[in-house]
Length: 564
Image (cartoon, rainbow, N blue to C red; front, side, top):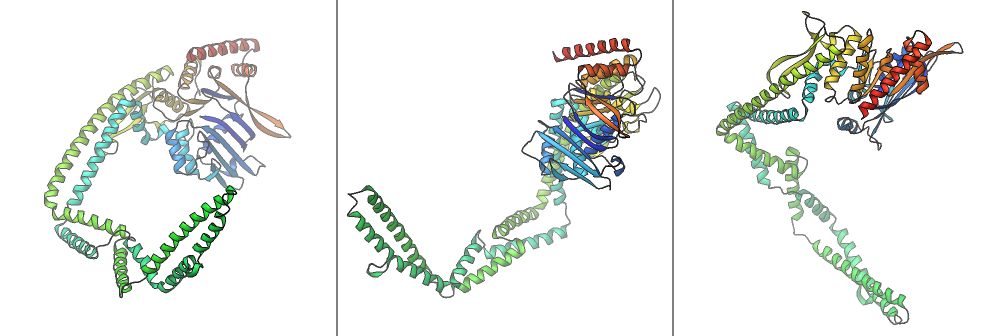
């Protein structure tokens, strides 16, 4: 959910702070006051294209920032984490964009430098902007099948998951068969190569960790004299002849203290620690003796180690950097060799496996396709009902269907949401609707039908009420309020009926100061809200005020009923 947005030096906006809440948020104001500029600010924060001409005259740079609560939006969390942009405040996401008058632009996500592309990818999960703007996810045909599948709910998604498993199994079986269908000469060449590699590795018989051990042994042999001298000297210092060793000295110290240990408990503790020290030093002395004794090597051992290391290094150079990699290559080669030597019999098995997997995948594709066609009929009915209630009865919606020639990751279905402007007129894709107002209302109708399936939390409707009034305005207000039960809705509107149903009401106005025009945005309290509705209604002051109070009361009553 969009919680807050800060705008500085964008067009006529010197500085504005907008706070949003859940439910229906509306933005109202006189024509030309700058309402659409604020939608442009949000579009820029979501990766939209911008240029230096958008920076306010006289300012060095434009700064935009928005804070979102992302809650349980797991897919968005994974995206942010994959881009290494997550913070300890895992429920909050802050986007920032700075654009200079010189055209240079910088983007930030959670305070970390990012890119416009990353903002756009994140924006796809956060906000849909509907109107004369680019951020319209429903206009991309690639998303339509996803919407339809999500519209089907858990039962349909289980069918889709089952198909995905069958499809993956078939692709694996097809790849195995493809590997088996090889040229005979190529098969024989690969068998010869694998046999040579297996024999070469088996002849050396490498063992895991062997090279590391041999390297340590070689180093010890190369430094035998110095190691021997150091170990013998240390041993003599610990247990030297004639009571001169450190162990004997500790024994003498213990005996001296033992005579007075009955007089004080502290010397007694020292005696115990001295005995422990003697035992530790004796153990060290024995280890040093054993180490020195082990430095006696058989003649020719160094040459044996060098030869073995050379053989292992040769294998490592050919088949992997470590002995473990060489052994892994050996096992793969053995398996592949066995597969190639028994390829004829294996090829028949693979053909049967591929046929079974393909049949299962095709059956699952038919089931998912059948389910989708039922969903398409339901979605068509719901959307056309919404269009009728929005006074667009002549506009008809349908799900256009094409069947792919081959199985794909989502099945064999290719769909597109299409509309016809009127009876007898051809259906066209959503992206070819000319009127921004029409497009917004068609999208609204679709969103109402898809509301329980759409994961995008915030919907922005820019001038969704263009060209409508009367009872249709009441219907539109009702529908925006209804969709706000599923999403946070942000609507720029000229209709008092919509403004009266809002949970948060922001007003945009212009003021002149110092010879310059500025756009201001403010959150309206109850009395200010009443005054704004009066302005929107127009006409005679007293009559407009009574009407404004009535629609505010009606809007409050509806919200109370919906809350219950």
